[in-house]
Figure 1 (cartoon, rainbow, N blue to C red):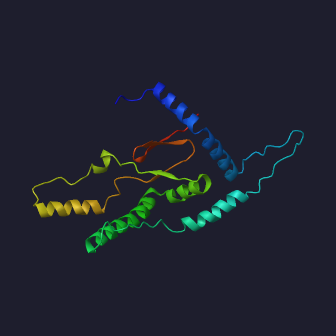
Figure 2 (cartoon, helix red, strand yellow):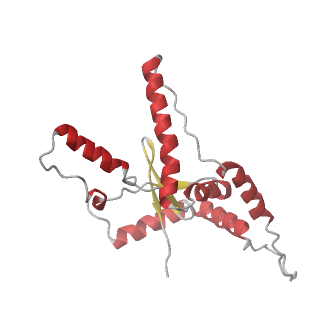
Figure 3 (cartoon, rainbow, N blue to C red):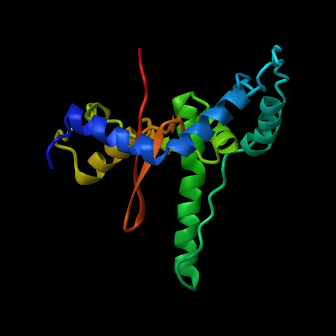
Length: 195
């Protein structure tokens, strides 16, 4: 597939903005309401200053406190009956329930908080996990005549001291457009205006 050029990107964004016009308007209203910048449509002839109480912000923040107090807990149903599927499901649960708090700790960012905030304000939350890239592996242990067991131990020691090979990042919901295929959600395109 050919790399998209500026014309393709502009046309794609025009189509997406047209498809999601109503959702984008509601999103902007919810954003403004949460941030206290919502403008009331006053009848003609009425001229008054608006006072924002911040109630919407307080309400969302209080409800968010319930959901963000602890990290999300992942549960997996066994894929069959017996001890082996149960052990496999337990292993996946243990991995995921360790992974997300570690990713949050490594990033130093309140990723889960931002995702939950978007869920409360917009009804959906987005995140991405970009890979760390080739620099991550720059100091991978090289073989220097060690036995297989010694080299395996070197690599295991290296892994224990490394960060995760990917990051967990919040993706703002405003101007994010989903793409679906026959299997459901395939990708999300996001736009950001910069001056």
